[in-house]
Amino acid sequence: MMSLSVLQVKRLQPELITPAKPTPQETKFLSDIDDQEGLRFQLPVIMCYKDNPSLNKNRNPIKVIKEALSRALVYYYPLAGRLREGPNRKLMVNCNGEGILFVEASADVTLEQLGDKILPPCPLLEEFLFNFPGSDGIIGCPLLLVQVTCLTCGGFILALRLNHTMCDATGLLMFLTAITEMGRGADAPSILPVWERELLFARDPPRITCAHYEYEDVIDHSDGSYAFSNQSNMVQRSFYFGAKEMRVLRKQIPPHLISTCSTFDLITACLWKCRTLVLKINPKQAVRVSCIVNARGKHNNVHIPLGYYGNAFAFPAAVSKAEPLCKNPLGYALELVKKAKATMNEEYLRSVADLLVLRGRPQYSSTGSYLIVSDNTRAGFGDVNFGWGQPVFAGPAKALDLISFYVQHKNNIEDGILVPMCLPSSAMERFQQELERITTGT
Image (cartoon, rainbow, N blue to C red; front, top):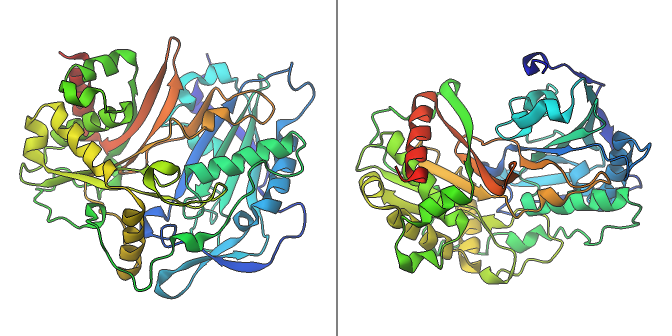
């Protein structure tokens, strides 16, 4: 087994992939949900594919993906543009067809040798998604970076970095699906993209009609022991939830909650409680967890067109003082998580857009007493097939400070959920022990 600490990835110079045909030269405004401070970051995603000679004799994944990308960008041409900022920090995309950044690479390693190193938090991410200097800004930079790395086994890794103001996970999946369809010879994507970001503009006049704890700055009673400002001491680790762990957690909640709580709710309640316990937060401190709730679909009564690829979600926060959260059984946290998610509807989303405009597009609260969780297990990353079959793993490559992404992961025996977590190193060991205790019932 080779030492992966010396893994060498050979990269060619990055190139710009432009739309395959001329596209409209225009300026398009982002929505008031899209351009909030909390979405002005780059989201890394990694997708790993085995060699599949029966499907793809003599086809080169780099050639296939490059051509398909160029053709998909004809329909998703704003992604080939560049963002600029107007008055009141309003973001707009200059649809100039400059293109997205593409990197062709190869690594002297097999997928089998990489093993768990492809899973979040991916320790080799900087090799498979090289950050070219000057490419990762939010304004005036490529909106998407794609690196395809061919492996010696015939498999390949597609890693990408998306400017989150442009799309959410559902929107990114629409674009990736369009690429796979173009790669298989389709003339147009089966679902045509819809821009229409004005659907989620603030109302006129804007009015805040709901409580939005996710944007409230709480008075911090901490003694600094869990300050998240010093990034150098932060570490990441992933935690697995399979059938056994879920059985133990379900035994800890009251019967009236069992039938109505999802796996996501239960894992979230568990992580929130464990994290609060190990960060040694002042008992009187308000602690929060936010669940990303998609506005699409009938359940939230928000009328979002089928091909809409912008950000269409809110993250309502559950709030509790640290003491009752730590001292009560798990059902207490679970009930709060469920209640917070249930506040999401059209009025809530409109109220968020109005708040963001009235307050200058603020960042969500970023104290250490806050956690944001996003369920990507049903996003569809595992179905993205460029012609080499389904990926061995696909999803967000790591946690980002306060944000943890839940991803689907098939270990040797079952389908489970993997959750990367970011914590100060001093708290990570305690978190692992606490989580083990709560998920084994010891």
